[in-house]
Length: 282
Length: 292
Image (cartoon, rainbow over all chains, first blue to last red; front, top):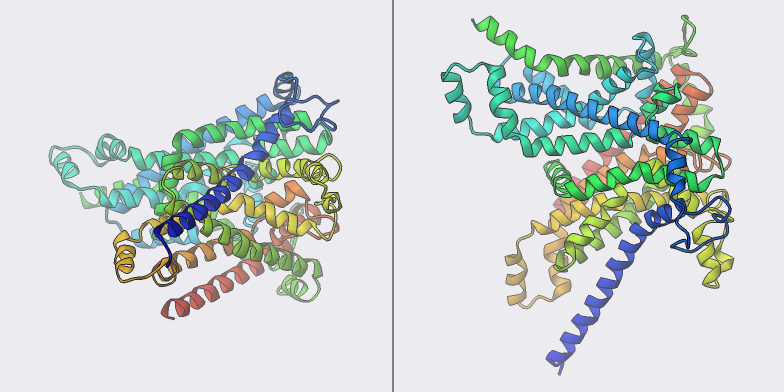
């Protein structure tokens, strides 16, 4: 006869294994980052011999070296500029379009919206090839504007989708009242729709910021000028040039990854919401 | 009046429509056009070859099909190991209330990092001579397992696949967790009252309700993993000896290496078609599974 104690022990052992399982996976998630930072604080002399997780001497000078001589200060500012520009542009372009898709009627609206949605779901492998040709023709290759416009396009469909879904759920009474009071369409969009959309805009901002900061391919084919390169591209160039300077490379990687991690920790709620709502809808 | 109102409406969508037209529609059309030409991207003259590029891809380009197999292998690992892990973790977190938020936070850190960062950090950890992994293997007395993970042709692809799964399981985890949490607890309670044990609950309640979510994760995994390439650029750049080549990397090589823009577009179209077919098959298969 199996006693209550038997089941309790069985459950306790199972819980223990589950905890061990979860903890070990969590460790494998964090350990590489830890090693990255740890390596960045070692010197070129000790990096190949010192295998300790926490180095005895913390060589913070690597970061100054990476920032100045390594050029990562410049690349960081580039990434920041591109990310900010794209995010601001998308907020305006996508919310204008999403609001129109949600509230207005005009010929071709459904076809246009369908195309945006289709673009989101149909991947075109190698789309960077004709994009390269296009940018060459527009003389936008190796320019910040070219990169920014491309990245705006990349994030457009998803952002419009998120915003339109939100606007659809927004009750129209406030807007109707405003329109009766003589407010223009733009006025309603600017003074009412946008402020109310703050939670969705947060998701849009974060998704696009993450995408632009982490982007590599378009930067690869667009930029030849090192001074314009964002961090991800610059990291690969750096690695190619300074093959064995691991402490510096790790410092550069940390400089690149740290902002993302900070933003993620602060805004994790929105990221999770965006992923699960988008996925569960699809 | 109506005209003015309609024009205003168009004004709202015009920035988006314009950018979309220039940076998506036009390149989309060009991909199909260019696929039928031989062009180096610089000379003003293109040579029309019709289906020549496609014939070459199908019949002559062994590296292309090899890269497709490699991508398929990585995708297989992702579909099995990565998603099984994601599901197990989601199931574990669904029952375990206390540290759930902590784990959810940590498990999604790898997906949030860029492929370049992940690739370069892991390349350092996996270094044959000075990497952390080999160091620990030797310390643990498992030195015979230590190897040149990324430069040994027999281990390179699997290593890359595992790192890719490391980076990717967080997505599946989040989606599975969200799916698990939509299952109402009353179902489990009612089943318990009727005498069901944990395994019955899992088989009759959890599993059937999770099939749609699993299908979604499956399709997303296939589409995403087949097109993966940046992580590979950062870790091995397609080596050693083409052992970690993947399709998108081949397209890049056709464009930047061989300067064959038309051929690159043809490769892109072929790959896109294959992805569409695979997704379609997955979708149909999943419908059949749902009815079962």
